[in-house]
Image (cartoon, rainbow, N blue to C red; front, side):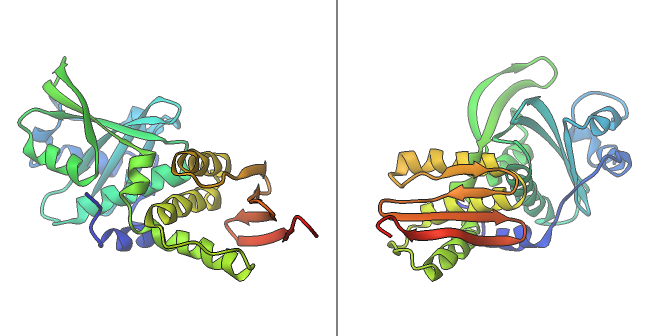
Amino acid sequence: MTFPHSAKEVIQSGLVRRTFDPAFLNSVANHPEVRPWLQGEGDLDITHQAFNPANFVLQSEFGGFVLLRHEPGRYEVHSQFLPGHGTHPAKAMLAAQEWMFTRTDCVAIVSKVPAGNKRAKGFAMIGGLRTIFERDDAVLGPCEYVELTIADWAMRTPTLESHGHRFHDFTRNLGWADHPVDPAHERAVGGALLMVERGQVAKGVAFYNRWARLAGYPESTLVSESPPVIDMSVGGEICVLGMGESGMEALLCRSASQ
């Protein structure tokens, strides 16, 4: 299952932003058509979670997500949206996933889906979260515990291919040998490139190398995080690139025989 083509619109549009102000999402969570779907009793208040800088609160026009850090790199997501806005929640979820995986240390997003809550189950499926186990939760009762890893996200996101193409267009202009079209490779490269450009340099290189080892592609070496410098030498070709938000630059590119 892959994301719908409309995900391209999401990633390009900046549909979500981080906030430390809980007021809007508190109003959404306590809306009379939203509150019955959320756990607990009485008014909900995410002020404590929003003020904790280890967490991420991502807000869109009609709702948003609270991502609570379980441990470095692993976050539990809670969502709340005002009713009557069509596909907006699904688009916002895809944008939030892209935001977390490329701008933070996040490598896994987890959640709980109460048994019988078809709305929550459908939302999780659209986002690609898969069931890892089932058990009775102390508050929610019988639940599916679901997870989306960074590898699953990248391989399910066709819009990352455009960023992979952007990288390969650059290297092709340097005279690098081309290779047959490989959508999985383009997604891995595209995801890694976004991480590097958005400040997650070591994470981006590690993410790509993990994929490359399994797929049989050459790995890269992180030379420097600041400024971002990556050694992508392969076989007889030596190439060191400077990479970051401002773009890519060939710092050294020549044949090893030279």
